[in-house]
Image (cartoon, rainbow, N blue to C red; front, side):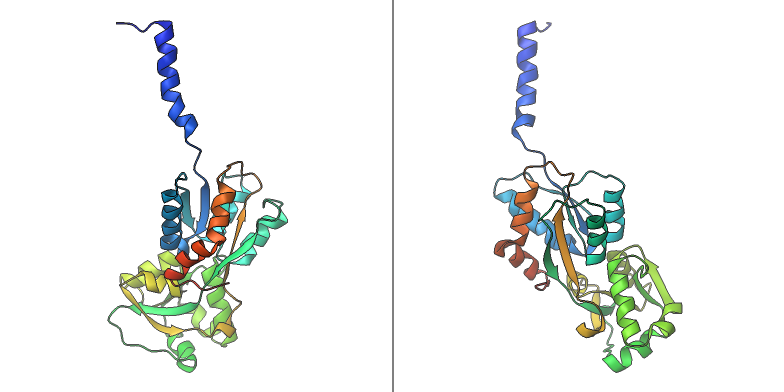
Length: 250
């Protein structure tokens, strides 16, 4: 039986109404190391009755380049200030929305079951025998922090020939988890997130620039929920979630 014109219009309206009633979820581009914590924050935000944010995780360098290329997104959370600076220089950040979200520490990991303990004195000498996996030190924040630390310890020249470059910090972690590399340089929160690695050494905080994760709303964002989610992440409630996963105050 065919639909009358009136019933057809009614059916179209019935299908359209739920879609119109549901606000579009914010799209968040976030550094790979934030995976567990950002998903937990998004879940808590959704439990308060908001549309669950859609989150894309990758190296900050890759995400920033996507924004520069015009990719539609609402929020960007970088693992360092340089990539956020790059977007600011191009006028791609909403004015007044940039803020430091969390901080982190830089560590050396080895497969679980290892017994290595690297002091500041032995760390550079041990890594110089390689291989050591790290996020690409030419572009990815974790790799850049790692290179800066090794340069400060006057070990980069000896370690660099043995470096295995990974796409991002989680890819570096995965290689150590599989035993494909004896050591990796990752964030303390990455080590905490995996039962397959253990911390073999901690880089002195003074050996590299402070690890800060800035957040900002993108100038092209038109999502009404994006600013609310940004403010939630920066609130005491949001920061408490990140603290549970080992992140520090910025």
